[in-house]
Image (cartoon, rainbow, N blue to C red):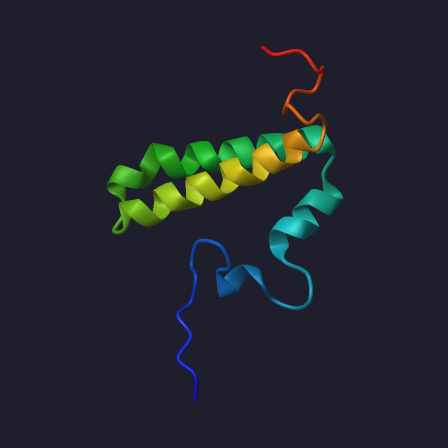
Length: 88
């Protein structure tokens, strides 16, 4: 019998019901701009309330997870991560 530890930041089981992960379904149904807003909003939410949670470190890791997903999405636009190709 294996004793796998559940990863509540990167692969929480309540977001992985069936064959499609919730975040992937969200990305499929939203426009790119809407999905960017979703990622930014979730990162902000976790950072906003982390001090008031039972496990503040976990919430900071969750915020980081959404930020990494956002960076990956934006880096797909241009190799330097900018949409216009100009550094801002």
